[in-house]
Image 1: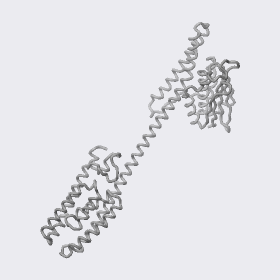
Image 2: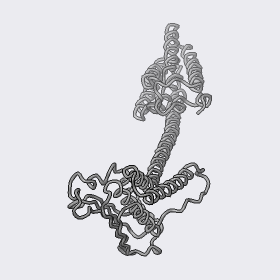
Image 3: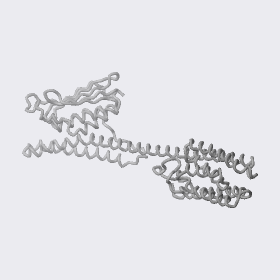
Image 4: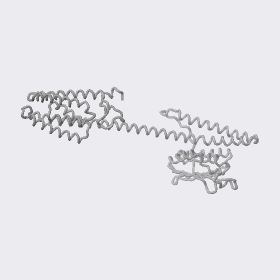
Length: 412
C-alpha cells in the first residue's frame, strides 16, 4: 500500500502485519489521520469541558473554579496518550468527571477510547463507573441549583452513545483486520502453491531428462569403453561400434532438443508435445540394447493396441530404467522382461537380470549386481512415476545374485 494511502488510515489498519500486535494498535506511530482525530477529540473535550466549567463557575468559589480548570486541562491533555494506555486514561477522565465539570468532555472521549481498544469487560466497567460519576456529580452540585435532571439525562445518554459508537468502531476495525489477515493467508497459500507447483515441475523435468538421456548415454559409454579397451578390434567391429555411438548421440541430441524446446516455450501457448514412447516402442528399445551387446529376452502377454497410452509410457520408462541399470551395474548378465495383465487385473511388469552360470561374480556380495541401485535417482523418479499411475514399485537383489525390478499398475 502506498505511504500516502496509509496516512489516511488508522495506524492499526495501515501498519504491516508484523507490526499490528493487538487490535488496539498499541505502540504504533500515529498516522496523519490519527493526528487529526486526536486534535478533534482534544478540541471537543476542551469545548465541552469549558461549557461545564462555565456552568460550575456561576455558583462555585474562585479557588474551586481554578482547581476545576487545572484538573480538566490535565485530563484533556491525557487524551494524547489514550492509545498507549486506554484504560488508565479512561479511568482518570471518568473519575475526574465526578468532581470537575471541565473533565466531562474528556470522560466521553476516554470512554470512547476504552470501547475501541480494550476488551468489552473493561468497557462495561467504565460504563458503570460513568453512571456512578454522573450520580456523584449531581449529588455535589444539585444543592447549588447548578445541576438539573436534564444534565443527568444528558450525561447518561452521552455515556451510552460513546460506548456504543466505540464498540461499533472496534467491530468494524476487527472486521477489516480479519479481512486483511485472510487476504495475507490466501497470498501465503498461493505463494506456497506456486512454489510447490514449481518444485513438482522441476522434479518432473528432472525425471524426464533422466529417462530420456540415461539410456542413450549409457549406450555411448558402453561402446566408447569397448573401443578404449579393445583398440585392436577388427575394423568391422570398430565401425559397428562407431555407428551405434553416432546413432545414439544423434538420438540423444534430438531428444534433448525436444525437452529444452518445451522448457523454453511460453506456458500460455498451446504447443504440440513431442511424441511419447508407448508399449509399441518396447521392441525397438530391446533391439537397441541387443545391438549394444546385451542379451535380453522379452515375453509380452499384453496387447499393445488396447493398452492406454499413459500406461504404456509408464511401462516403457520402467523397462528403459531397468535396462539402463543392468547395462551400467551388471554388464554381461542375462536380462528377462515379462509383461502380463488384462483390464481386470492390471499390468504386471517384471524385469530380472541374473549372472550367467559359472560366472565369477555370481552370488558375491560385492559383485556388479550388488550396487544395482546406484545413486537411486532413477529409481526414485521411477517410483514417483509409478505412484502417479496408481501402481506400486518393487526392486531388490535376488538370492544367489542378480536383481529384480517390477511394478503392478492398474489398467487406467
